[in-house]
Length: 603
Image 1 (cartoon, rainbow, N blue to C red):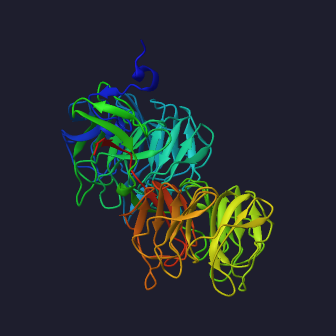
Image 2 (cartoon, helix red, strand yellow):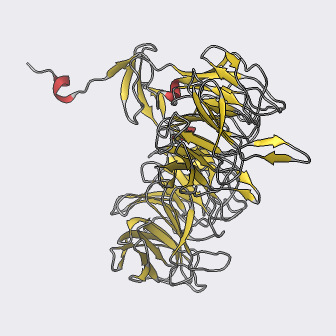
Image 3 (tube, rainbow, N blue to C red):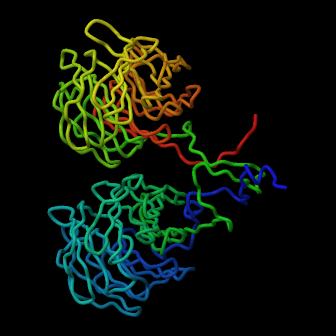
């Protein structure tokens, strides 16, 4: 006879330890024997048991080799120098350019040397003289690329390829920089970080560089790195003698356990993100510190997936992998090209895609900008300049309606991802806010018409607006999240805490906001949302409230009090983005809630 749980139930996996985001997430740094001499800005490369430190400062430095247990010296370069790029290992290496002390300043040398495991030989010079750059190689001294760097009149984007006999200029970096980190091989490399201070990450496929996921923290003198194009670590560096370590999985960077000693100008070696060596560097003085990175994944290692349920046999607890909004934090993101307030916005329901249009920048404009998760780009403008308009839809199917020109308007414009065209007019010209899934499915909620505050609601079907059930409390500058059949309308002017829920037919009053306010930023949907910032009638607020479907809870504040974003928030309650408004006016901030393994409790 079948058992109920075999028909309707599901099996819960038993694990000895919690799931983890990656094997690298289980890693940590431990002290290892120091270099024989304190050193900064040397050339570093090799594997975790074949690492080398070549040249560096204070000048002249002796080369050292790590065998997995201790450091020992080996033959010096023919031209001793620092700020050089190095690739390969103790048995097969190449060193390009660098700087030597000279009077009256640092002198950049155009000298390339090859190491065969017993001696150095000078080989063909690089076409462009520079220092403070990076190299990536195929584990030999005959297949190398040499990119970035510094030379008058400034930082370089140049990239040259070495085939064992000659250097050839190939595809340049997208962003010129020096003091960057090179990872990978001649045909599959990463260029990470650098100066001017940047978090940029570019990927090389043998012919061209492509900008991919940025690091979480910008930094130059990053120095320490390990791994390949799809599995890497970057550690230490500026600003502030950082201890930070970031792991790359081929798609994104994740912060993992810190170095024991924060420093810049250090070097690193290793073959992937699971084993690495960090050595040398500068704190307030040159240091010889060496640290080893090792990972200790459980034998039953399981990668974290949102929503998974499992039983931890060690802690004797059932757990679920969740993304709790109360634990989230805000961080600065790319600024808008033009500062402004009282604009309209649209969102793809993701942190990496948003649209802002019209508003006061500084007067009523038609300008439109699109966000791709990394930067804002100016795109085709609207036809009618206005402020305090409603916005709805996504970046490829958006709607802008109503607003002030300065007289109130009922004009509606539809955006198809490229151009704005006129759509059906609102029934009542007014200042309003809205929400909805596309340029053919939206609501305009409340507002201010030429005479007074209104509780009117209109629905758009792609052709015309139809008046539907009114909200219970008349107000304007309302914060709306959701769709035309499931929406939350929160706060509003005059400043109040009212929250109403829409089911496609009627509005129902639900739990009020903790603070009466208007003009904030909304992200999420009817079941899980954020209300960030706003104005309480006397001052701009930095507070943020999170909605879980039944109640509001204060979570992490934004950087400063701001309002007049006119609904320009986007993303979800656990991965949100807000932009424009009072204060700097061009500021963008992103909210991220970390994925955690939470114990399931029954009350």
